[in-house]
Image (cartoon, rainbow, N blue to C red):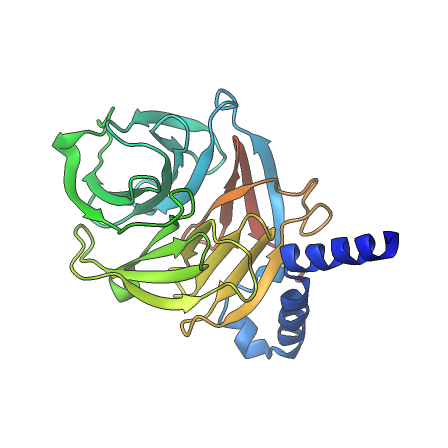
Length: 290
């Protein structure tokens, strides 16, 4: 009986961490040519260089993360109080902006011309608004557009990941579970212009999808899973190319990232992550390689 219990626990761990899929990814990584590595971010070469808790936000729940090329800053949202929070690249809070009428914010993306987008998971709604240096709260006066994302059977398993894909003029959205799915939503940089489209299922190698971002140089997509403690690089055909495990002892991490909820990349290729409740991480490429 004890043996069956241990076997069941082992099988559960394999499924939870997608260890079988990781083995296949490791195999693919080992077969990659120098040209393929140079054409990608190549996540295995990244190392954590900053791991901090953001003071004053211990009771909040950071969710998603986006980089603004215009300001050189980061934006996250809070899942408890409806807040849009601007951070420096070192994780310092620059301002905290209430979002009037919102609830359960999960996604944030920086678009074009001062426009930003946020998603509310329970309200199944995407809102686009304008933000400038003087904005101290977000209400009807900043609103540009609201889009109904449709009903989800489980209100807490809707759209989580959100990212702006400038190259293809679309928003990318991630369905957290049932199924784990990547979607595209055509947009012109400040307004949605088309219908939601299924792009690819990601459930083969992660049990949930928490966040998305797009590398502006390669066009590759980064998909983050908090349950599987995994960040995966997808090529433009949505095929997984390489990954990093967000576990203690890997890539300079002093402890595992407990609930990774957001990832962003800047113009220099530096990676940033947030985790509930108020944890902040910076990863840079190790010049010495893997």
